[in-house]
Length: 169
Image (cartoon, rainbow, N blue to C red; front, top):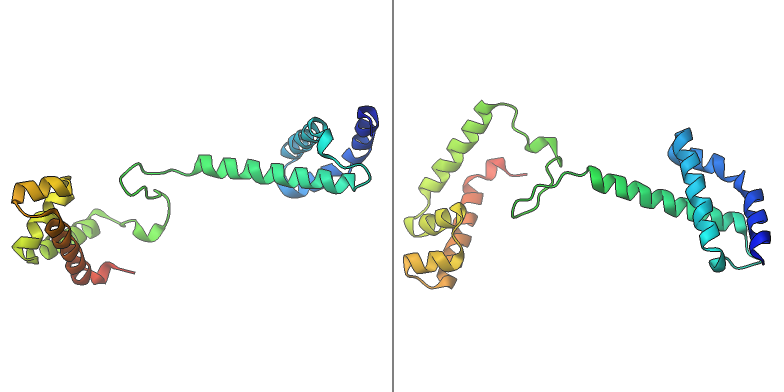
């Protein structure tokens, strides 16, 4: 199929793309943009079309994939990511948001009390790790093996989780 024949076939099929684009986007301007982008991609990828196959189906597939790709780009751009060590989403779940400062203060007092209940050999490495020391630094400061540091921090977390179970899922 020549380029001129291909362009003519695409012009004939272009009219049926607009209703599908409206159905996908629910907006007239976005639908026009989607149709234009679909036609541009179809014309620039003419060599990928197999003559004798369904041109409309090929165009619909291009349109659907273009719409999905654009939608994914928009949703990725609008997601806010915290750049902390654990990379948690900032806007994930309303159940993690404290209602007022009184509730937050009550929770913090429970956490501090739970940490104070830890055995000294577990509390000290845990607090050092919490404020930012690395395992190796903790091991050097406390003069204990790094494996022991990791084990004590693990045990401290486990005990804290048990003591603060009321705040879990």
